[in-house]
Image 1: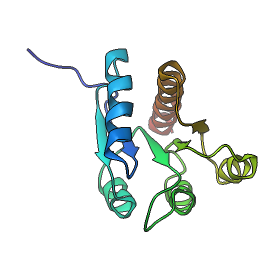
Image 2: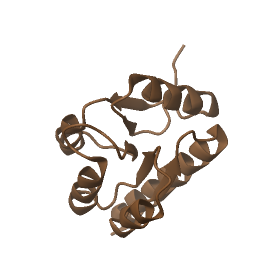
Image 3: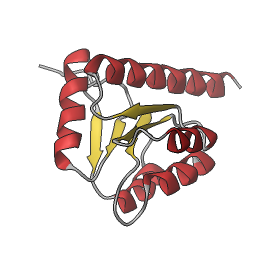
Image 4: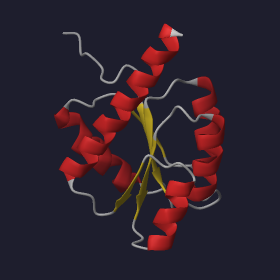
Length: 138
């Protein structure tokens, strides 16, 4: 039996809490988003993205060593075509505004309803698909 992966390029899940990574994965898989890669150390994100195509990134904002906000700035500067969805436990308006100024695709506060998570990821994957299609047409 051949399992079809969707999306073609993985959704990158980045959180320092293993339980959160599992939770996101478990929310996405039943809705057909079965191509995910989990990274628990923020330092591993940029090397991974530089060597692997990624459909979209779910990024926790509060992580040790490298903050999610720093990583967001770096990702959107180096890879502006990859939608980044911020995941956080903070309900601070200033943080949300700062993330959106740093070109975050979306901002979600934990605990996240599965339907909101899935719809946000699907919108991001579709945006990335349209970007790739546009690049091919050029």
